[in-house]
Image 1 (cartoon, rainbow, N blue to C red):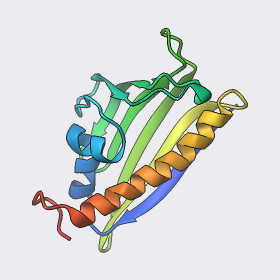
Image 2 (image 1 turned 90 degrees about the horizontal axis):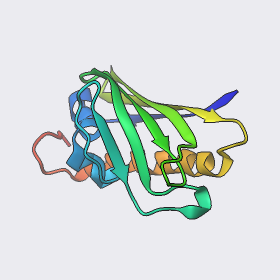
Image 3 (image 1 turned 120 degrees about the horizontal axis):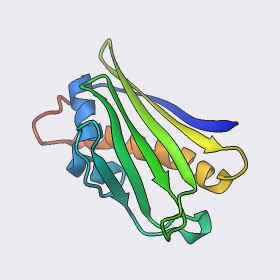
Image 4 (image 1 turned 180 degrees about the horizontal axis):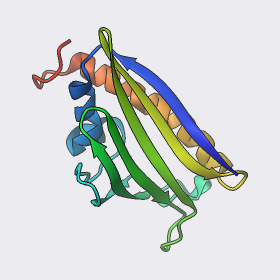
Length: 150
């Protein structure tokens, strides 16, 4: 049996603007982690941060882009572990964007956490996703890069 992390957010910006924060490596680094992401199906990329030994996380997330439907859906694998090429989390991140009146509904489904095995990391990631996605809203509201309509 597995567990999932599910969050839904609303942004007062069109899907194309929110999409930029999910698919542009520089913008992703501002709200999530440094990375080498490209929105190309089959592309392998990594997120890198400082290790968190207490969570058995060496600071590297190994990912592969699985689906890219511009402005509507993005998914990628999410694998990590304590290091030495040991993967203890083999999961899937799915983003769904839906245009709504006056903005965009963004849904995150991060699935594949094994019951009992990843409890501390799961808990940290559940809270971390919520905090990090909220950063997108702050970035959108202060953006001066010309794509956001504040």
